[in-house]
Length: 275
Image 1 (tube, helix red, strand yellow):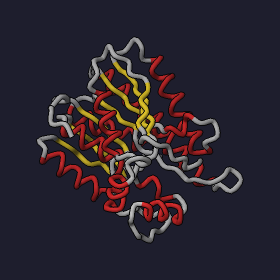
Image 2 (cartoon, rainbow, N blue to C red):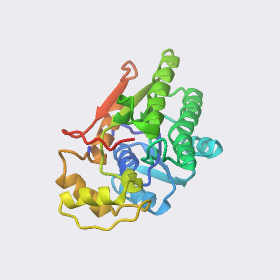
Image 3 (cartoon, rainbow, N blue to C red):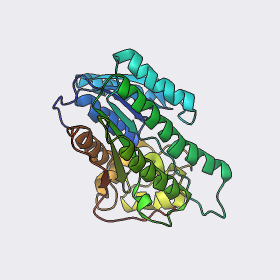
Image 4 (cartoon, rainbow, N blue to C red):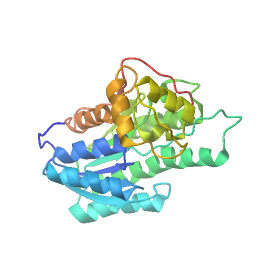
């Protein structure tokens, strides 16, 4: 990771920062000098990230929240503003996916995806813009979408990411006269806990390809050492969370005159995980 303090004096909020992509984004922003507010549901892992950020000379605060509740999203942003007096960077990273056909899908899983992937992101964008305007920030909003949004048959999860792309593009146009920019980042298949809701035999089979013999329980977190080994040994088809974090760091370091619309981050070979 870069050690340049290019974000000194800036305040950043990252949702879904308990693990994976959000964790990497938060740590790289913190190492670059931003005061980072990490939001997620697993406090212990975020406190470990906080320690790493502070060890690199950065500042970080941890706020556990359920971002499906709009009031908690607004409260997260308000907490950052109350603490530092400003907001410069908002990364709407939190997301969840439940792979299933439409005919066999569960309505509550659909609700969770809609509330997490779309509603929370919308409220995060709206609240962040208000906070950035209030402090006259040259603000950067980064929405984490997915390459699933590039396919028209990517299921219910993919449809939520199509919505993210549309929201990002619409908000970018609304903010053309503001000093606030919107970047939409579309990761490919990344070695993260996103796969915990996939069929365990499929995930265990992928792990076996990397020489890892592991038994998993659907819905439970995949051990971090398994994810690290997968990312290291299967670089052709699995990206690392740090790959996405570097793209986010690049985006938020652009001058305000640069409108960086979309970034795709993916490994060399594609792996279609379905909808």
